[in-house]
Image (cartoon, rainbow, N blue to C red; front, side, top):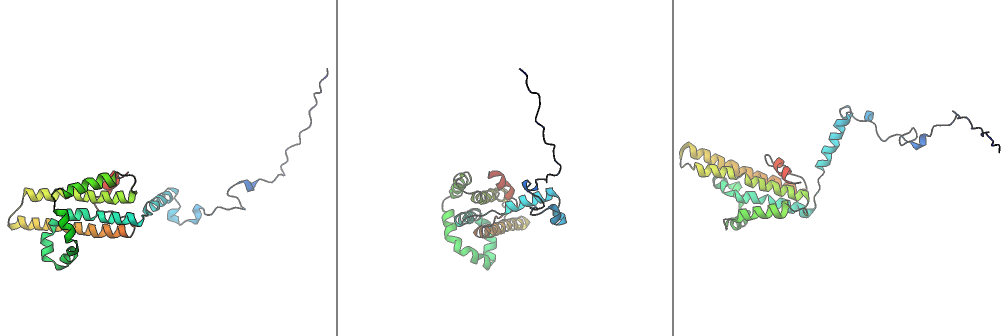
Length: 215
């Protein structure tokens, strides 16, 4: 049998076809929303622009009202535990007495049992910080309060080791106690007010340690 070896001619490729620009995401008909040239000069570096986006996303932490309230209350823990360092400041300055006066009932309850501080520490750490059911906002602020309270070990050791009765040593100890108390008071005001406003307070010295503990 004879087989036909003829092939049907193929139409030559025509160069007159228009490019399919409509299939591209960014074409002349659909220009991009922005380009690097449209950004300020200091942001045209892609690496800098990427770091800016990451930094902004970290600052946009939001918290519900219950989370804000729980976080604000946690900052009372280190203040109540270290209020004894304010014995010199409270007796000398009437405005400080005015601030402390409404807190006296709660302070008396906290100090009524010697192990209350340790029990509160265990409750906050294992019930709140290690509990994934709480938001990271609550766990971070709780951990900051815990780390701040742990730091009170150092002035306590100094006071127990030296305990001067008079002279320059007593003056130095009074200055140390007053500094610790004022630091705790500032942390309480700053931390609690920031939480009530929905912001993320970052306390000096303790913020990075709290970050490492909260996953």
